[in-house]
Amino acid sequence: MDPHYTEWLNLAIRWAHMITGVAWIGASFYFVWLENHLDRRAPKEGLAGDLWAIHGGGIYHLEKYKLAPPEMPENLHWFKWEAYTTWLSGMALLAVVYYLNAELYLIAPGSDLSSLGAIGISIASLIAGWLIYTTLCESPLAKKPVMLGAVLFLLLVCAAWALSLVFSGRGAFIHVGAIIGSIMVGNVFFVIMPAQRKMVASLEKGETPDPSLPAKGLLRSRHNNYFTLPILFIMISNHFPSTYGHEYNWAVLAALAVLSVLVRHYFNTRHLSQKFAWTIPAAALGMVCLAFVVAPKTAPQNNTETAVPKVQFSAVKSIIEQRCSSCHAAAPSSPLFKTAPAGVMFDTAAQIKLQAAKINAQAVASKVMPLGNMTHMTDAERQLLGQWIIEGANIEQ
Image 1 (cartoon, rainbow, N blue to C red):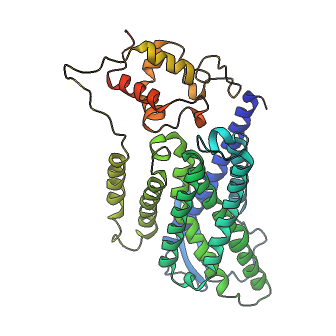
Image 2 (cartoon, one colour; image 1 turned 30 degrees about the vertical axis):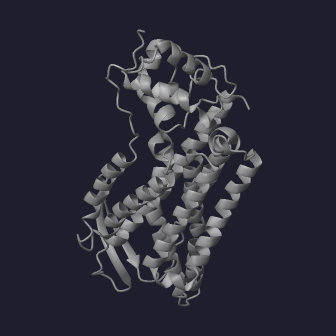
Image 3 (spheres, helix red, strand yellow; image 1 turned 45 degrees about the vertical axis):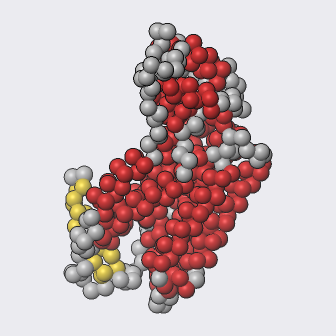
């Protein structure tokens, strides 16, 4: 497909994914907040609680029934399509970006893995992720939610590590996100919605619903709630090469997931007490510490009399022209792009100097560029670029 139309297809699907994801996660956050803020001193018999709220110039009164109202309403709103469309658009995006361009975005540079092999591993990881997760949730471990959560976390860390061995850092991150997203939508489609349908059917018949149904749905819904912040980070992670481009990217992802869960736990429990208030400063401190831990090591500049000559810009320009300018130019020569990715161009010396920090982050520190190392940039060339940047990115030589 023409790169121009591929880009617009990417845009349309990504936009849809973002919109539906906001709707799904927003609904999840709202109902958790609503449940946590219900006044349990219900004014009417049969109510589990109620809540008064004001928003947008209107006053609202919401009521939650212990089971159901005396008569079921004709229009009962179900929250499901937000989840389904988020997953469908996410899978479409995975196909357009990572399957159609597997050599660039999915497969680790230098790997002998074929595109079909990589796609096969991708699909298998999504299926295996759901099957392992749902098996654990149906096991006796489900009665120990904290232990179950710990086991699930360790398994996801193992998945991140394994995927980082065969995929690029960016590909590994997005697949951990795809596994989590598939688990979340599987919870809605296979557990939460069927349980709610059975519950409503029983109530309409005047029968008492099976008490295990809402319990199963609650466990899966709670998991979905804690998954949201880690998956939101993964959705934006390709903008931060110091995370997915790090040597231990799987560990970086695990650390960020822990910090995300700490933040989510505070907001889930703050209505009960402030005993978890420490999680917010702890997460902030964790972010600062993580930033220092993953910071690229910079070689000290040699100022002795025997210092090696400064890097000449002509050498830098030659590397940029050979390894980068096929994509990053006003008129890219690469068949993959019609316009410069992210608007980054290296046509002039001034443009190269302007992008020195990005060159350092993408090509030197994390080595995530060139994409898939398709132009075969060497480590020696990366070191030379890094030394030129350390010396001040001089273009006057």
